[in-house]
Image (cartoon, rainbow, N blue to C red):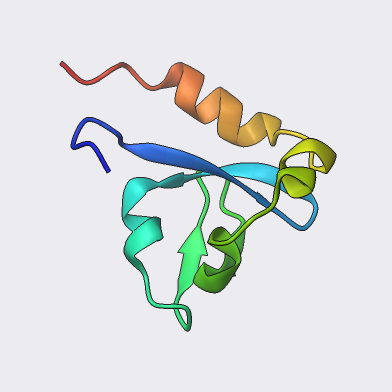
Length: 73
């Protein structure tokens, strides 16, 4: 992934959350924590189909956290 990416959005059961980019490098047995504090198995961050992206709503807590974070320069 490009070095300028600092987070990724991933649909997990219940909502589409934002995760630090490092979460994409976790082993499947590890736990990833979204910006809102939601924890999921890292294995659930991969191999997602388009339907999952459409069906899960965006987590507004993750959205707000990222909106309030100043951009990197």
